[in-house]
Length: 318
Image (cartoon, rainbow, N blue to C red):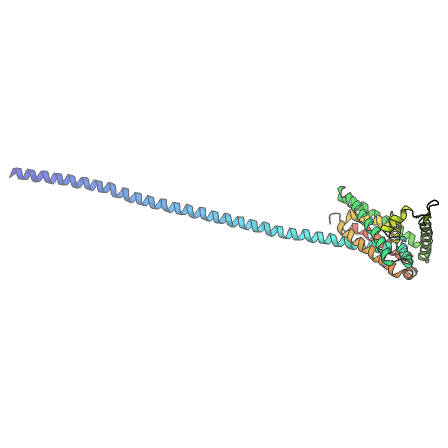
């Protein structure tokens, strides 16, 4: 009986120890597993937040990059448009300035009368082509000479050219003021006499010479050149080139090439020369007799003065 009680007591003790041990292990394991689970949950939540933040930052960075790129492109767009508008404005201004200066300078000028008189006795097309060849070459040369001065500071060339325009304008106004009403007729007759003298000299030089021994007629070397190019063409080209050299229209083209768009100056000057020379060749003596050189000179002086005064409100950087 006592033994049975002892065995039952030991069994209860062992059972109690086992239960205590299990309960202790259960208390230690369950909180640890729950805590680990909670910690893992918090870590996962943190990782999700980090990924969300990095993703949002990346997306925001891409959006900012896209916005900045779009903003840069949007900012660059108006700049390109403004530059194109400025270039087009410079081209137009150079064209208008050059064509107006050439027209008021060449109408009634010596080159005008040369083309008009030669067109009366020679082929109009040949005279026109020869005169325009000289004028176009002189225009390109003068404009490039003016453009070469762009190595000098823009402000300096701008104000120097404006001062030269003022000087030429005052000079033209003075010439027009003291000019007689029949100045055009006098200029016409002077050019006609000069051309007559030159044609006589050319005819004498082109007369064939006969070899005394062989009897073969030999022509001078000039006839070889005239065989390639018409004598009338060469005469119109040479006379126009010499008359244009140092003329006020050439100097005006140089000045415009220094301060305006050089392409606009070349195109405008060529168009102006074509208009004036075309009128001279087609109209001939009629236009020469009807035109008032005095009036054209006075108008030209006013135009030159206006271009000089434009420097007061149009800066060199405009």
